[in-house]
Length: 495
Image (tube, rainbow, N blue to C red; front, side, top):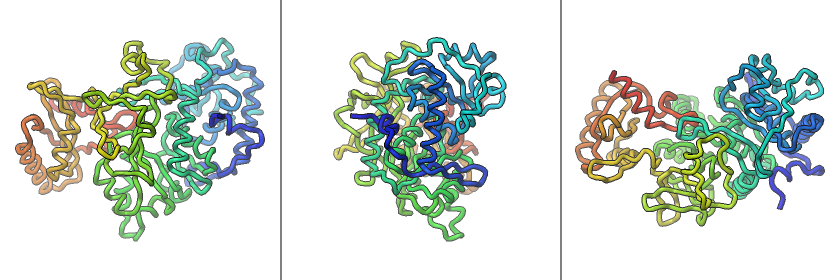
């Protein structure tokens, strides 16, 4: 059976749909056939370089049509991209290419271009690339043929890991996504998260295969882009949907529906990458939009998801394949499938890699999960965040947060382990609360805390005027709340 990238590049296949880009207030659209022609032109130029099969090209740039051209052209001619999520540090371009086993570095960054990198915009005019381009022709790679791309991911760790993306693993997720969400030529997908994050490229490939149209923009332009492009579905972290609700509430006087705020054509939305609050899920549901949670890791690929045919709000959905999942006695989840999204790490200490990619084929997610009687999954939290109480009992911070939510506490709060105090602690935000509301909230929290069982009581409660859930200072690079950053904030405030 052919894999997705082979199907995309069959000579007689004409690409359908369209590829758009929103920038500076304008929506530029290319027909699928025109975009396909530009991919072929760039691929032919790459082939003329006679690079080693499977050779690596580095790329560092924001979302543009040119980014996609480089990505698809490298696939077409048997090369691979190594996508950088942070600006590369280089003194000498030759040394940098050798260190990262790259043939070429592609970028939009002026300083990097001046140092010898290739301007990303030349993707659309490869015949204009001059002979002064710096190319490293030393032996480029040592990856097997199933390697599709190299990506960096910080996940919840806060430091970069380099992952080897599998062709078979990507193929599995893409085809299941098209099938389970019934993608067709009627669909339109807006992508605003960085293409350096491989999840976004999976969305691109899914659109091309299903003949759906897609549009690229950056986060700052997402609201006007939604109005101009009118997407049928979006994939985004919870912070985006909370922002959408804030905008909607501010514009309710304009008599616009939530769907109209998002372009008026939404069929469904997907959220993941971090826990989402019940209030946001309820708000979308009450306004007639299906906001569906999904869950996966770059190591494994997608693990569970809700679909329009099978969903339960508050859960991350049902497994793509239940027999792939192993849950230990403490709720820790591992995945064992023949086609995980990643083959392993190319940048990770061996000791840490062995904790995740096990010899028996299990991939340890580091997440604690609960499965209900209907087969829906719930993420309790990270195993590394577990609080070990003095009595030996293990409690996850999310369990304590849920206990407060059940008491009717709906203000922003986050529980963490205050290491120096050896006790559970909580940060509560007074952001956007009046003085009267803040006093009432504090009274409710302290009363609720007293009513909790001994194991769930918070020993230290801190109040701040800072927002928590939308605050980049408390988030990882992937927009997930970092309890460690919250602890560091408390420590710094106490100095």
